[in-house]
Image (cartoon, rainbow, N blue to C red; front, side):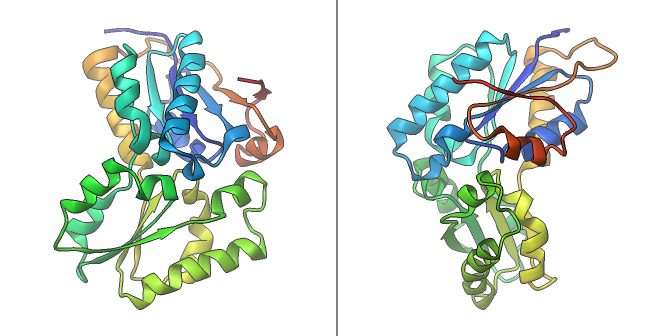
Length: 259
């Protein structure tokens, strides 16, 4: 089964490029289109109704680009809107949610930490997943301010370090042995997080799992491209393109477009 249309990926901002990168590395011949809704970031502070409306707007844009599958590279959008998206659109969706299962199943201390947005931690989907692991103590922490600092280009600022220390120290004190990153922006904080956490604490994000699921859906339902070399990925952003360009190490063109 062959399908040369692109894979669409969207996030509330630049963070979903961590998911895009995993997909691109696994499926290098596939054409990809990435949409960063930075103008409306962060989604985690918005109501469910707002998140659903913004997600539909993003999907409409990607479908106009003839995307064959859409990856919701945003934990908040997945946990609040993916059921509505699947009900309304006739295209496969891949979601991303905090990787509680591998952390809980592998934890020796039976205490894990989750750093995520308010919108993700308050969502019905997240809480249903968490309830499946009642034998594990889950320390939840809203990452107030982290996404905005990343979106503003202040990834390595003293303020970022201070926030991370204040969020992670209570988890360390509670004896976590796994930290789950519940926002696609947060993998960009891993170097700083590792400086704070003891070495025995494992960090889990969802990038590789999402990429493998995307591959599976292409194989089973949609079809792979038959191109030997992929077209250059396309990146769209509706605010502050300089930050997205820097995250991509200036390897690809970034199109600023109002959507």
